[in-house]
Image (cartoon, rainbow, N blue to C red):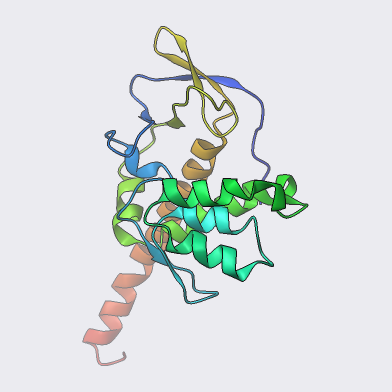
Length: 186
């Protein structure tokens, strides 16, 4: 995976896809947003939120705890369950958490409605507005500006680019496939 920029920078609020809560116009981009469940193809398990999947990855050797997290009614409760046992997190968590968040977003994009909503942001910067976390998001600094690494936003924008490229490639191959089918070749 390409390196994510972990340095804080200034992000503009106006004109960008800024979200804080699930109810916000771009709130579906947050890990707590409901209604964007997906099935992990590696396990066959359904996850109600990307937050639940992400938090469960803290405990790869504790299937019972992972299941308790997966069964949580929403992302907020899943995080609460995980954070009650955060001291039991895998020892390499800080080395793998960004890659696991990227995977959580990729899995969430298997939900077609979420993939469409992610693409709907066009070329806007995606920024998680947070009053507490300048790593995953960015904090308000006044005058419509936010400061932070915005790692979640960077990962979402990277996934949006991958989705856009995949859909463009599919669109390029459809006409040939359709023509072949119409001519009796497929």
